[in-house]
Image (cartoon, rainbow, N blue to C red; front, side, top):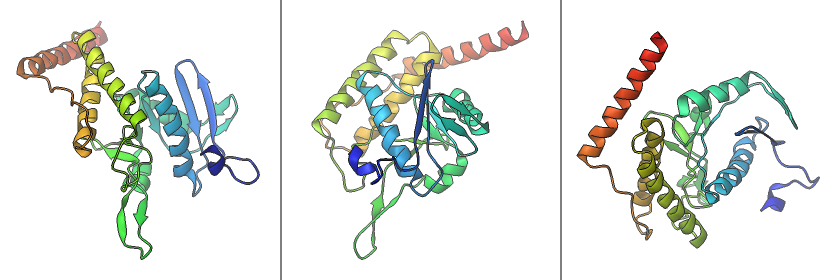
Length: 231
């Protein structure tokens, strides 16, 4: 796959740059006609590898001015992406800014030889808050004609399920953390509903008393922030 993505001169399309510092990874590509393909290719590799290790990823994708070469990286769009990740994303998802969502949000078209529409690549999923995020639980490739998960993907999905259930139990008294895994559980279940023939169990929805308790924790957390701001 790597060889197919590389051009004849041995360079990667859209000049991808990758920098890692602290607990962050910065990936950038040129804003050209291959930008989405190049971004998806490298983003998929990063997220898939992290999932194999049991880690979930949060981030933001924005378009704008940036200088990125090796360890040197600066520009206004870096600040924008950071704000998206730290303030807007909230859950373990990599969100698109509104400008890119208008261009890429529906996914690339897949057509028959006669140009009749088959469907769209499933790169970006629309969340309930109106934000598009990288649909990383989709089977590879994310084509509308691909209706099955590979055995390896099923194993990772099952591992992700076990991790989500475990983390919900471990952090059930900490809303700031458990809310992220509750979101992940809903996302996981929506994927299983989309691929109904997948032989994996859905994650049980919280019962009434659990929902009430989580609501209490959410309110308590907001009260603590208000008190901290006043003091």
